[in-house]
Amino acid sequence: MGLANCVDGSTAWMDDPSRLMESSTFREIMVRTYTLLTCAAGTSERVCRELSAVDGVDGAHVVVGEFDVILELEGPDVQSLLRLVSVEIRPREGVGTTRTYVCLD
Image 1 (spheres, rainbow, N blue to C red):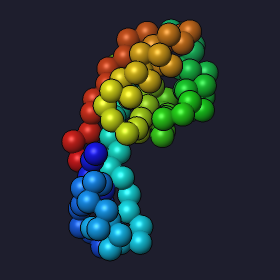
Image 2 (image 1 turned 90 degrees about the vertical axis):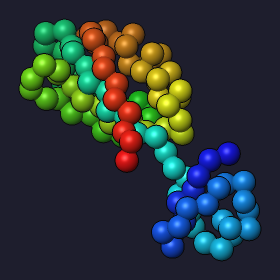
Image 3 (image 1 turned 30 degrees about the vertical axis):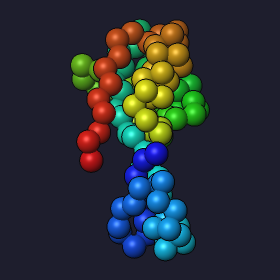
């Protein structure tokens, strides 16, 4: 079980149905990461476009600097997001190094 943010601003454990029922709507807490990619020369825009369509990718941006693409990922837990990086992102043609940073807020 996990935490849920209630509309009224309070937080409740999801295994406490009486508390959750007090609020008509609640948002399950999701994990967010930023994954930075290096890409082969000339592939950044294609990689970014392809990855933006993958489930769990909440945003994809071509950037200038040490990395070529920044992905915003969102999922139910860290393990699912790391699986997403390992299975869907790293194996793609044009993707080089990846660095994933888990958001704490």
